[in-house]
Figure 1 (cartoon, rainbow, N blue to C red):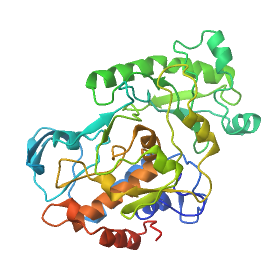
Figure 2 (figure 1 turned 60 degrees about the vertical axis):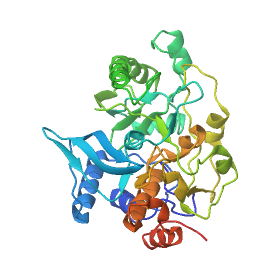
Figure 3 (figure 1 turned 90 degrees about the horizontal axis):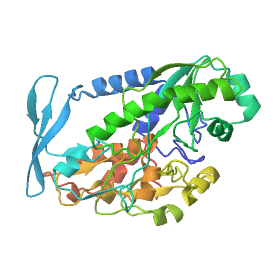
Length: 371
């Protein structure tokens, strides 16, 4: 997703490191969305971690937390074969689902007033796409233009009228962000399993749709689907401040803001064929060049805890605002701030961090924090 508001590079610091490693320092069109070369990104992340000197492990899962009076004493992990504990001064929850925060006793919300969440998507990789014909013939967002006819012809088993579509990749490849899976709670193993089965079963329907209804895709071939279901929304950890849609509308600024961001509120339909919401209509208009909203440090501080920070998709926001903060560049912003705050914290109390010192450090590292 977009790294800038068209005038300022908002996801500075770690976000710029990643962006330039992927696309080059000469690339300045940072307001548009880019497809990601995933193998290259894996190596970038690997190199960044190794060069940092940090100890890290793959193939581990968080299974328990030892907490007393709001202070986390240790976290328990299941490795490939071994069970082990990790003790630290400060902990950062970047699980996306807020798993560590919930285990530590932080309050949270999930979904709308009825507990419904945005649908998931099983992303996919395609080849044999004639991009010249696909884009020239039908413009920039063409993929849903023949859905009505395909519904009438009985192509789809689920009448999903929203189709984010295919992302252009190098040569004749495409990245498929297609096919919603409704009614999935990404914190439940049963839902994730059902969702993956459902998405894989319905993928041939989209293959037929692309090859039989859309120009440029006649010879398109589905290479693979993702190993994991793409989850847009689960828990939002409640912190000392809940960033909300009013803050988005007024381009809010905060004395303790640790960054600014600009992605429109992007809420996918909760049910097949649901009418467009206000935010879906506003999404196409965008936020306006040069506009951004602030993210307070308080959104990274889960209530009922002392030595815990949260970053990424599950920071403290309303459901509407989560539709903007959940995307990758904003996760770079909150992640860098949480890491810096953890380094600054003394006696395990992340609320005692000097926000002015934190903001100075983030600026020094490339963060966008205007006075």
